[in-house]
Image 1: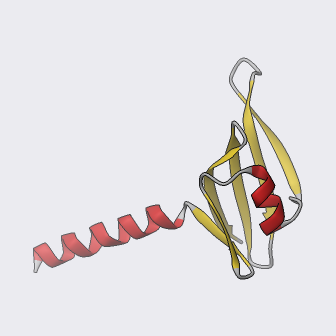
Image 2: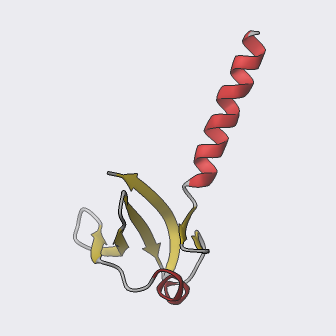
Length: 90
């Protein structure tokens, strides 16, 4: 029984880690590694763009925010590519 619980927990952790790498916009998908142009084609223009900076005010990327009915989607760019996708449920 204990082994089954451990396996279930590991499966849930793995599933949630993979889910953070993409977001669905209608019937299309934005995933890590996508270029900014593809994201714009799939998701449209972001509702808000935040410049990401180091502690010394150097630019390290951008966070594009999309506001949907029940969630906010954050897409993090570094060097023109998606490095992270987060969905925050309201």
